[in-house]
Length: 481
Image (tube, rainbow, N blue to C red; front, side, top):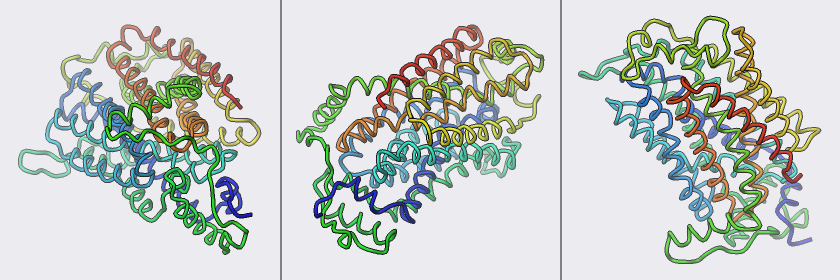
């Protein structure tokens, strides 16, 4: 044989050291992105006290990075399909690491808020390509398991943050002073959240561009050389010894708009995604991903604060949020900053539960397809959420609340990987960016509902998301096998 389909070549090459480095790199990217977006959850109480924030200000700070991520995602997705997955990740990591370092030393709330927004703008390229990169070196049949295994990094990152905060507590401690500016422990914790990003940058610098992207740009020689390098590393033989002299990519899709105007090219490429045959599955996957994200991430952002200010009596979840009645809606008063010590045990338990759910999802994928696994996770999460209307004892309530969140968290990337299988390589970056963009809009809406209306309309809002998960379960079941 001479010209061989790339998926057959990947099957021939097998899995070796370079793919392990790719998985490790993508895992580090996932941990870093998770730290940047979710780390504000653990630091929120200390930041409220340091900047003397109101509920509205805290809510804006929670979603600032997501807003930046949403605004930059379409452009990042477009550039990903133009300059490559690896190049986009490197640029994204450089910009986000730089802005995070500067943000850590912002002296007041508004500068810090703007810094968080800039971090969101910069990190979008890494967020989009963390899984796109590894999937393009994985056969479609194995993608769900590879995606799920790589997603264990989200659990490790979620565990890394509360463990770090436990060792550095209290996070309001002044480490040193620069004139009138106090450098507190939470600022150093923010910098420590960047370490996985630094590791990911160094590793990605050593890795090649994806062969599928090269083929989509017409660089068949570059794709062949990259795959030959993998074959030599894994098999100790080159591709020619197996009779492979060139590679091709079936179902590549038509070349997209060559218009000279950037806005015109961007719109025409996006229009290709939101028109048939991709529109119906795109809408279906977007709703599924938005449901998992709004509960898994949206509720996680407020988890630490809700646990810190919850009532000590045995009452149902909505009645336990007694911080609503004690919180001063103008500033952070003495009660919030000094009355209760901060503990991060619940955050560690939450991360451990995410890891457990990822492991159980991986075991389920060995005997069930992705559609059934997502349906089961959404339905069981909805049951745990519904049970919180009745559970009053604190420990069972904590278990139900954690599983309600973590079953959704562990399903996000698995659901997002479906769009990568449906669209061709030339549209994959933009389709992934657009799908996750709508999911992050759902996260922002969830966070704003938590911050502004959860106290007065807790039962209505909470049960809306339970019902949303039931819709997600139905749509997941209707996915193509």
